[in-house]
Image (cartoon, rainbow, N blue to C red):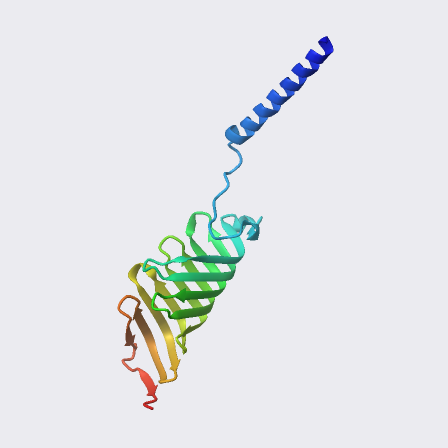
Length: 199
């Protein structure tokens, strides 16, 4: 009978010791950084580099952001590669970018670019290098497209070319107001080239 009580006390002591260790490592071990919550990104795609020069960067692969902009339009933003500075986590620098905007009027805007920047707080987006966009059968090319969600504007900059069934247009800057659906066209040399099919 005494041996049985000793075994029970030993088991209780071991359980108490293990429980104390778990509590200590969970709440009192301050050396481990706390895990950061990353929304809309699969955590298995995160790769942290061991280079001293890249200490402040987190690398991501095959990421996808989706949600609603400030006007209630749905968007899906994908990138094959991305990096985030640990000190400025709202800015995501991306490579090989695809974005689809589903507007409330049932129109769709698709943008492809080699580079991009996404601000996950303001939802503003920048697309650069080999930028190509499709909107309602029209093709749009430029060096840079800036989606200013906070200002409800889409800005296409530098070497802008619009190809549509109604004709083509070459300009330096297009400014599309997403709220009023108006388009402002401008050129640095005060010259806009157009070729319009009147048929």
